[in-house]
Length: 99
Image 1 (spheres, rainbow, N blue to C red):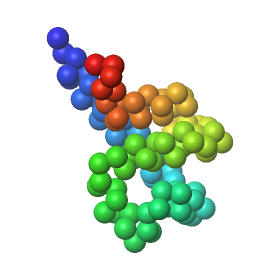
Image 2: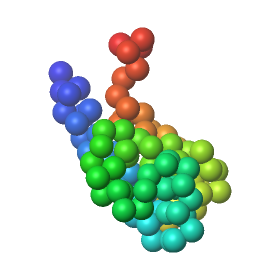
Image 3: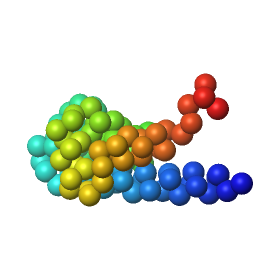
């Protein structure tokens, strides 16, 4: 089966969406400052943090935790809000107890 290929493609799409979400946050000073404040990331360390495992999941979690922000991003990105949750799931991988 080609399940692995689909998973890799889904992960790539999820990473692209999360990168778009980060760009969306960064495009507005108030949005990015709130994200940095809530995540505890120092503004000067965002590049280093961005390469850390789990960072993109954190970006999506931030959107998922704020419905108004989520809806604004979804409209901006042209994707359904559910797409953000699906991208988060694809990045997180299968939950160990469900394998």
